[in-house]
Image (cartoon, rainbow, N blue to C red; front, side):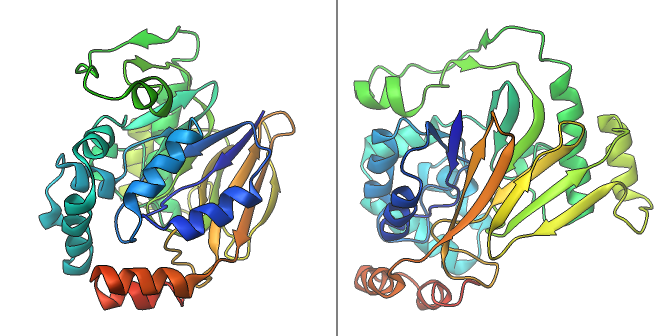
Length: 302
């Protein structure tokens, strides 16, 4: 099966449509969070993902916009964008965001916005040391693979439209118990891959090593930066954390939208950069009164 990975869309419909055109033909879409925030088209981006049956997890901006996280944690520009987004989203859209799961697990891979280590705290994975904490939690997930999917308590979804309830968020009340060797993340807006070599430490050991001394090679974790994109053949004997970068607000020095294709049969990851009309998005942001700093950075990819 082929998966289109589209993370950190941040309300940028122009970038999202360009990416979806490039990813046409994939079997399934996955979003590692932050559908909204920063950009001028939050409702339109949510609608687009509904039409794709996209599996999504909760990002910190999704949480702040939906009211499940205090936006005081954000810097002033990001907070201003959150408050603006709250004003323009419908109640149904905001509630839909609040129902997103913190992580999604499927046989062979797991999806989370930031890190599997304390995911509700939205820690960044931007170094081998950060990656080791996330990899440590993957060790725990692998022990769950033999168990069937289990039901978990969740609030009713009766007030949501049928299309939202049944198609947009298929993981409301079912939590898969699979783990795997690949973790898809977002949050940093940087296209890169972390590779862990065996032997794999336990979760507790990973935490101890991350806060203690690491070897010159990053404690068994390699960091591969991919700001221009590229393809990786995955080794079944290794574990991977894949950040496909941001669709709507890249920060790796490349202003082009970023996405990825994961082929679970061929076991390949391809990170792809897609040009789009940045200027039209900046114009819509100005008309909406969004902060100028957020507008300017789109043109530089920072």
